[in-house]
Length: 432
Image (cartoon, rainbow, N blue to C red; front, top):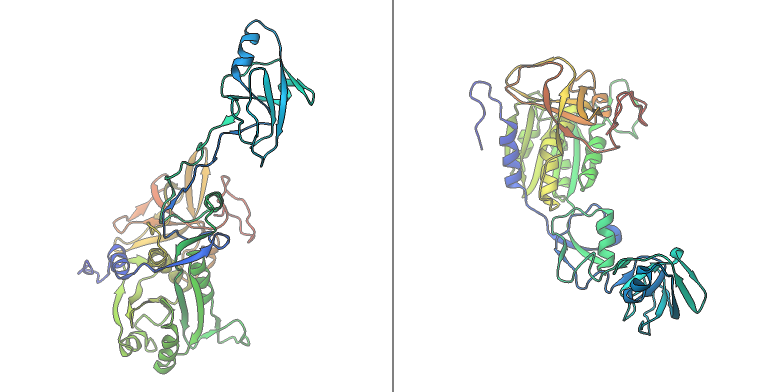
């Protein structure tokens, strides 16, 4: 790991990310139904065991004919009358062969009978139960979907490491894959610390603040594909903190918020060491989210995030979420990134990488981004309004309107192409 900057004592984010990912294992596989597979990551290559479609079939309701029977008469402008010898609905195999002067009535999806090489659309004919009169020519092979047009036997159709989407689930069904192997989901134990915190079911007191971090982190865990377990609140004593952390070691990851700075009641470092932890304690060169701890306790990943709610969510995005994605079997661990035109003035010191909460829009074919307003680490509405994080590098001191910036897209509702749209939360913004 790259050492902290000797002039600032701050650890670069990319160095911390490397330490985290190097320490993160990929979880094992489990077999699940395709009904439960949406959003999961495939742990096997899906190879077609047969062609799809398995035979040439009709793309239209109409008549299966021999092209030779219709080409000559149409060349001299005469309609053609053919004898209908069979009806073939979808789901039935034809029993007869189309011979000269013959046709078979066929429905969409039904197999093409032997002898036929073209399908006429029903609307281009006049027909009775026993005959069909053809007025419009068709090229040879018209309206036929060939065998293997979609999938050929032996092809790898969905690769290992793919996150399953609705189209993938449909393809799994076509390939008769009712169960598939996927990577396991990480179990994440979530703990908040501090005597000042009250949980949602506690009686309200003016001396307390609501424990929002546990619920925000739990939602972030679910969105990243994990299974959250709330450990509640640990009071500001070493024994209380140790007891709660011990319960969390049944999970794959422990995420603790608060107690990682240098206050008199920040016991996290001492308790981690008492539990035999191998930990790194960093002052990260980012804002928000400077104080952070990471390591392993009894072989389990442990993160100590800052207590301020925005700092907690931003550091989760940059460090915990990538670790979870690696555990889940994803081949890539970052958020989608775009470049956008900054619409404000901004200045900072050149010792920290900043993550501004932003609103991304697309106007006249160009991405534009502005901040959500006040960017304090305790202003959770800055995350509520945001559909992206504006990633400002360490070395950048000033931004002006028109400068190009890098933007990390956050998940949620689709972002708008119009600035000022109101989303369900009631905030005047364009939401992701």
